[in-house]
Amino acid sequence: MKKNAAKKAFIIGHPISHSLSPAMHGYWLEELGIDGSYEAINCPPEYLHKTVKKLAETGYVGGNVTIPHKEKVMMICDEIDENARKIGAVNTLVFEDKKIYGYNTDIIGFMENIKPASDKNIPHKNALILGAGGAARSIILGLKNSGAKVTIVNRTLEKAEKLAKEFGAEFISWDKQKELYPQIDLLVNTTSIGMKGENNYKFDFSTLNKNAVVTDIVYTPLKTEFLKSAENAGCRIIDGMGMLIHQGVPGFEKWFDATPEPSQKLYDFLAAKLK
Ligand code: ATR
Image (cartoon, rainbow, N blue to C red):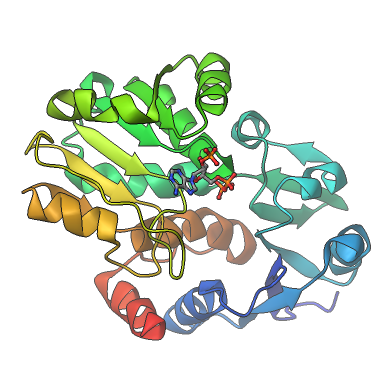
């Protein structure tokens, strides 16, 4: 690599055109006056190994990994950090000293996003997580690491049970979730319910604890039906855009040696792109 050459990073996925990450990292690069780039790479699964190796060999500093490659990319990493290993997925790669390092920054993204509403009291929180798929894992780990009591509820009970055992959490069946509503402090939707064009499920939050903080990892649309129902029930809501923004910070720091700001201006800039 040429001395002082512009640093190049990427996001790799399939499909990738919908990703807001290039706009976000491009915004930060410009804001911080860094001579660098962040490009979207559309890569079908069968070419993942070859493509990542090539990127590492051709001067890229690293990048993000998204659907459907987050699990498979672990096989290409030389070293994987503990959180990524426990979650079973890597979303951030760093190429350094001829090695490929894998991290999972979703856990930081989620925890930072709920921080303003968590009044530094997470260890005493009673959290209910809806869903037991891949997206639930970083959230459950983040909350367990912080000392919260975590209960998992999922349409397919066996998946909730398996995850609860793995992470030392509780689990309940889908039709029992309402029984917990009055006692919970934090409610997180990690299911695909409410995603653009996805299945619609009607939540009845009439008995939800009014002091509960309710968040959704879906950000298309920004205010999902799930969040609207919680807001109508008088709860504080946090949308999923902040998680996307906060998960991007550690990667940017590692690739470009600068700390980007997860500002309201950036939030508005990205929100405008969803319209
Ligand atoms: P991801 O990796 O993004 O989490 P996933 O593994 O497909 O995606 O998981 C999707 C989650 O949404 C699952 O918990 C799924 O429940 P099941 O395990 O029972 O399939 C949940 N989900 C999707 N549609 C749902 C619906 N209509 N009602 C309840 N849960 C739903």
